[in-house]
Image (cartoon, rainbow, N blue to C red; front, side):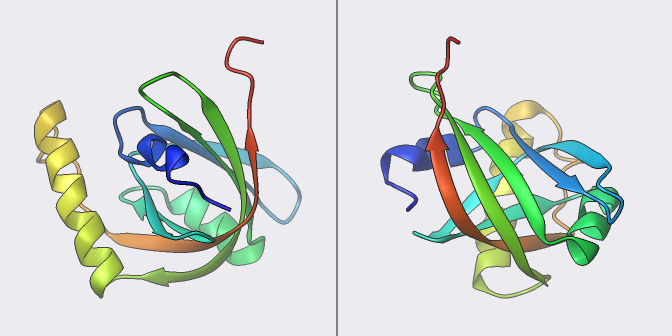
Length: 132
């Protein structure tokens, strides 16, 4: 489902957006620094400071994530379902290391600290038209 071509949009060059909803259906959109490729049907998103997104995923596991290929500005929409939160392990450690690189490149080393990573199963992918 997640192709190699899409993975460029997961490197943090262009921040991604995740949209979740609470139990009443009220949406919340949050910019995220990193969408991490786990395997062809799973991603992890960096949780540095988004308590509302985490709370929404706990009560309503559905999310939409937009990533953008920095090479050609192609946007992709990933529909996903929250699986679990991790605060240690291989995925968490790899994301923390990548986040340190993103933070140092943007001068935000003191701000970007990975608290957790949210593991999501990607249920569908759509390539969007970048220019309407």
